[in-house]
Length: 176
Ligand SMILES: CC(C)(COP(=O)(O)OP(=O)(O)OC[C@H]1O[C@@H](n2cnc3c(N)ncnc32)[C@H](O)[C@@H]1OP(=O)(O)O)[C@@H](O)C(=O)NCCC(=O)NCCS
Image (cartoon, rainbow, N blue to C red; front, top):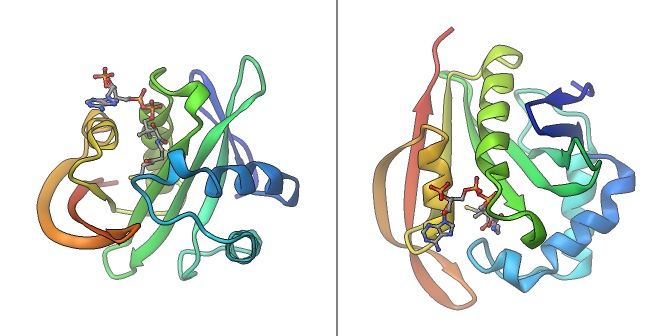
């Protein structure tokens, strides 16, 4: 579980204590949070961070997070997380954030494909889901490029900074 996960250009490492500054800078950045939710207080960010440092198993209710590094430079480029949503047909929700400086290089798509392969092959998940707002064209494109299918759009499903947004629900099934 703590081993690195590798793709052509990316190295994923399990979230660790030394990632605090990166995590704080991501969750307190209004641009990165624009389509995710209201920017949280330092205390809430720290509490979530500490929850995610706890040991994880498929029965856990907290998110399992990896930091995404660009293998060539070693730089942090973002994060990707999963959270178990169903145990009967093991299903994981995927969340992801790429830093502004690394957008548009295909890293989100590459990281999602990598994590789907890892979670299916190593953790036994059979289904993956992801949710994003209808207006978040970049995220929708990424999910489609990663092979996910749009199942439904639920109107006014989430409130972000006081504004109700329609949510797109994507999924992908994996056998084996
Ligand atoms: C959305 C996000 C994940 C994209 O990451 P990324 O590494 O740039 O994504 P990729 O390079 O793999 O792919 C982006 C795709 O979306 C497209 N795209 C980006 N912005 C777009 C827009 N406004 N309208 C239409 N397409 C858009 C790109 O052209 C590209 O598609 P292409 O390869 O066919 O040209 C990243 O900007 C991000 O983390 N944003 C902030 C956090 C966030 O919103 N996370 C998602 C939560 S649901």
